[in-house]
Image (cartoon, rainbow, N blue to C red; front, side, top):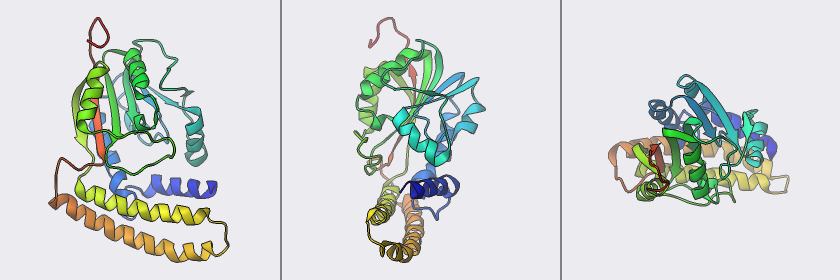
Length: 258
């Protein structure tokens, strides 16, 4: 199974941005997301939950210093799959970093995997300088992933409430796709989950079955990606999105929580 995870991880990093990939409908937002965030990234930047660090090169151009941090158990997966090690290991709920030391914090697709997000937000607020920048992304309509470490989903109103309670002010946010995106990615991810389940079976004929299914799944994925792209242009509603990418800043106040 580890071999397949590594192969799939490399395939995702190299071909995820073209429509032959089953996860294209989510991965295509990567470039737009990092272009959106680099307008705000500045100074000493801490990347919490850095994972595969796919955006590292783009971020470094905008910073004085880029520091990647990851949680040891989850970091092991990215080290095995992508060969990416963080600069430091740590826990977002209790950061071993001086108060008011960081200009920008990146927290991309991480908060849903933390059992106590409020503790993480308090720590991020603590280590940021006054009016420091907090860039993060959260899922809304997206399947369970990294099971069992997937705890929550947020609406835009939940995000606004969470930021206010933790002494942040939202500067700007963007959505990730609409109804067409969701419809397509749910279909494609379900195909992937079927493959993963078959790989886990302990019988020899699964390899014959997989050889038959792999080409079909990629054909279906390509057709679904094309159809979803058409739907994205023709059917739109603020009620449907995969998630949000948000830029906020630390409020300057004497008493935390005012």
